[in-house]
Amino acid sequence: MFHILVADPISDEGLDVLLASENVVTKDTELTPDELENRIAQFDALLVRSQTKVTRSVIEKAENLKIIGRAGVGVDNIDLEAATEHGIIVVNAPNGNTNSAAEHTMAMIMALSRKIPQAHLALKNQKWERSKYVGVEVKNKTLGVVGLGRIGTEVAYRAKGQRMNVIAYDPFLTEEKAEKMGIQYGTFADVLKEADYITVHTPLMKETRHMISTDAFRQMKDGVYIVNCARGGIIDEDALYDALVSGKVAGAAIDVLEEEPFQDHKLLNLPEVIATPHLGASTVEAQENVAIDVSQDVLNHLTGDLVKNPVNMPSVPSDVLSQIEPYFHLAEKLGTFLIYLTADVPEEVTIYYSGELSDIQAAPITRNAVKGLLRRHLGSHVNDVNALYLAEKKGVTINESRTSTTKGFTNLMTVEVKTKSGVRSVSGTLLNGLGARIVRVDHYSVDVMPEGHIVVIHHQDLPGVIGKMGSLLAEHAINIATMQVDRSNIGGDAIMILTIDKYPEQYEIETLKQLEEISDVTAVDL
Ligand SMILES: NC(=O)C1=CN([C@@H]2O[C@H](COP(=O)(O)OP(=O)(O)OC[C@H]3O[C@@H](n4cnc5c(N)ncnc54)[C@H](O)[C@@H]3O)[C@@H](O)[C@H]2O)C=CC1
Ligand SMILES: O=C(O)C(=O)COP(=O)(O)O
Image 1: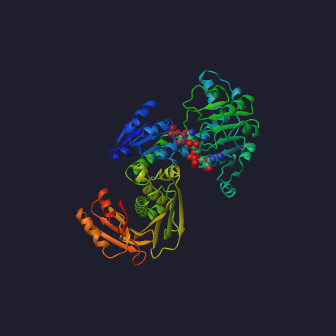
Image 2: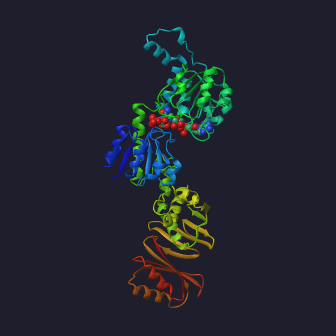
Image 3: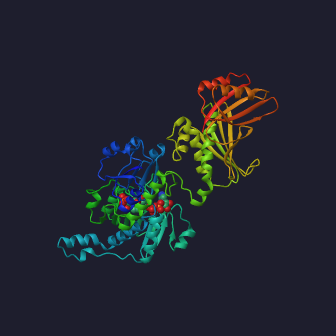
């Protein structure tokens, strides 16, 4: 049973998904920032829309939080870096409101062109002013779309239906794709220069903040119309205000502003500005869609399944996942095993993928290996979400390498750690029907199940060592379950790997080290 806080109004259909699996769902959509900070520690999951600000200070107090679900697209209200750092996965619901946001954009374009809100308001105030509200047609006008993602694309298709010409700019748009869509491909400058209407549909990020600036307005046609149903901040509001007052911009339709909620903003006092209070996604259909999608992902994560729409972690297609998931456990165990053997600070970690592993999408497997490595010293808060981030913060370089050589195994994964005192490595494989095995420790060949209590002993290959070791362990009532030995050469360095029934005490390890043939003993708990 998990405790889930719903901090913004989210459709009941989504909450039903959460309640069906007997979670405790607390709906409190009126929390102040301080109240949210004070209460967040008791929750496993937090569900929000755009209103609640999930700041670093909220995340720092969220001791039990495992997931933040955004019932919608934009995650600019969530401190993603802080979430990643604390191992909290962030998921969104990117598809459910596309249609509603596109329809709202078209409604804004039409309302702007025909001055519908202004005429409506006048009429409500008993003013019949037909000549004041003469509009313009959109037919044969050019719509410039900045950001041709899910919503931008839907807007482009709808605009074509209104007989508009469409020119679009998006870093991922190719000329071929534009041609296929029946729209014009342009640079950002082309869009600014050629459009009669400009609508923005990018996320709000460092690169897009104020991308519609004073300079951008200067490049536009006189009498251009501006639409923002994406995010406040993409358009520089002061620059827009000046461009409206000067007449450069004929009108603007705004669903979003930098500071929300907005009620008293200088832009709203201009008659050429029409506005809605962030309603792009506010339809019954969109809210049902996003609530169900995000709730399902929250449940997936809480119950140990992979999520569909992670924001702070790459998503893995299901066909790839079924191929790589069996290696997650092995990778984590190899990482953990190796860190026990590594006395110094790891500087560089390389994971070698061989055989059938050489051409798979290995990043999620790597994350599991790094998680295993870091957990021993950083604790259980290291997880798939923050493993790579924490490694980077600790100055550990992570590399992946691929080779088709497998030394006889169909699949082989080697985790290698470089420290100032040298290189240590461990290799593992998944044996068909038999499960995971550690098959190599440094240059020694072994066959060990990566489970339970293991003792790794480096010793000299001399007669009687194994017997002495067995007797010493027996004196401490430690039962040996399995034993593996390998050596460099006859009489040379050798390794003994024991799996035992209880984790040895430190003094028991020290007793083993007393034997002169033994150079090192490490107890490993997998
Ligand atoms: N007003 C509302 O209620 C709603 C607002 N939104 C907002 O609409 C925006 C778009 O959402 P989606 O289409 O779902 O996102 P998306 O991720 O599908 O599309 C965003 C597009 O912007 C492009 N892009 C990124 N940087 C760019 C740049 N510098 N110049 C041009 N294009 C750039 C990306 O390549 C991508 O194709 C987001 O900001 C989202 O938060 C979404 C739903 C409802
Ligand atoms: O999905 C988005 O990005 C939106 O802006 C919708 O916001 P909302 O969920 O309506 O607060």
